[in-house]
Length: 398
Image (cartoon, rainbow, N blue to C red; front, top):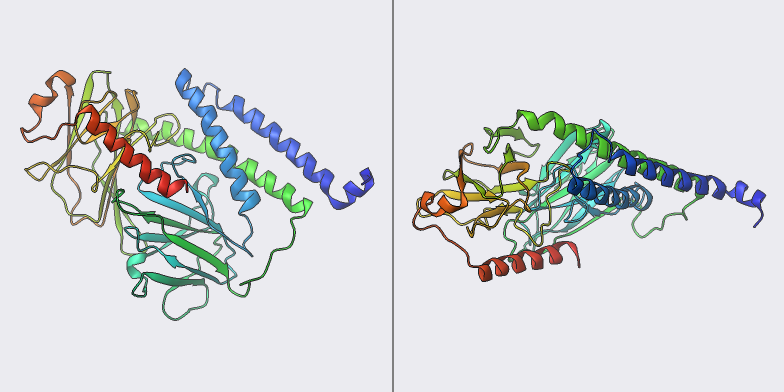
């Protein structure tokens, strides 16, 4: 093929856009080391890893999964592609759609604790965030848990979700609060009328546009969440949890969020005491203060939910947050860090959760906690981690 032929078929433009993409990512690698980003050597190392993760995710989103005519679900915010404060007890799926079209979403999620379908007009970090939700509680299934939902502007019988004006994506959050027994769900999506058809081959012009779109998504993502954390962390209580806030969903869910930030020494332990509460879901997560990641989910207890938390004899849940392992069954691991962000979520609680906090030295921890507190041996802790790793591998890596 001659140079003129390449120009005529657009491959020169695509190659130029690829070179531009690489230059933009090179510049972003320097950007995340700048003074307005975290400066600790460990944070900077993890920041460059975070950038590599976002490059992989951005290319997947906009090169491989950006066709609303033939959508398919991309899993993101798993144990690797973490961004924007993901919940480890969710599996997140994304598919590109067009608000003028009709889609059939179908599958089986009976192996989960339920799911929420969300229509959005864009990504939060790019300035768009109109959202409409539909809960699995409001979806009719057959006896085996199979279901189908139509997404469209025009009403459909049975399970129908009105199309959000200007929607560009559909997302799914599937909940897992029994890690020992629950397995990944099955979701499919197809544009009505395109069943069994095949997309046209990728052309150079489309590839060039998608590369530019991916670069923009990656750039805005890193800058937005860095600024978001810097703006909000100063307003959170230190070594404590803020009063919970209600966030009403579109399908009768009521989600509450409570947060706090850590300032702990290596020998310090923060004890959070959660008063008895009935809720569909309770979860506490540790996030890195630098990159809003949930850490090594498989090999560390950086998150805990009601299926994993031990309840003391008085009905309260006590969680110990600390850099070093105190031996407590409900240990929230900060990966050796003294700083970080805590977020507690509840779903459909009968009342707002009440959480108190107190700091202790490791040497005084056993005296401060009830006599029936469960303490783990090193062997039992290893068994706990093995169970976590098996679930994460099953949910995200098979």
